[in-house]
Image (tube, rainbow, N blue to C red):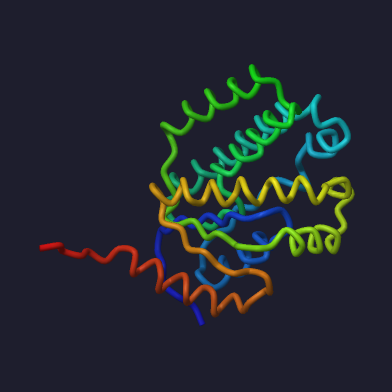
Length: 211
């Protein structure tokens, strides 16, 4: 079954390993929208980042910001909508965690944030963010299951801190962008989720009058 949603920009958010790419691909097929994936395989900084985080933290964040901004612009100018398997706004979470942990210098973090703010003037918000909720334990299990060499050193402590940052992020971003939360502890039918997302998206645009 397919659903007709023209020129809608959906961005998926969630912890590492939660299943963003899986849902993005399925939603793209069900909703007949192009999918824009997070740059992992062709990421020229990722392996170096995990080997020497402090040295390559700033480089990686700038690389990711540039790639996701490029995706944002493609979605806007092509005018047919799209699905992103990570939002550009989530990059701020990782940059802040790097700064707070001492893995990114304050001046580099300030430079990154200044660049992000300038670039945001040319961004168009997604119509909806889908937040895939997942426990720390499940995130760790999925990271181990997909067995990427670059992710083998990720600790429970890191994912725990990341989850708290995500919870804070969703509370903040929902003030400006509608958020649909999905309990993603177990993978669900993409068709079922697409239908629910479609119905939730439509209900977000209802106008109510207060007398």
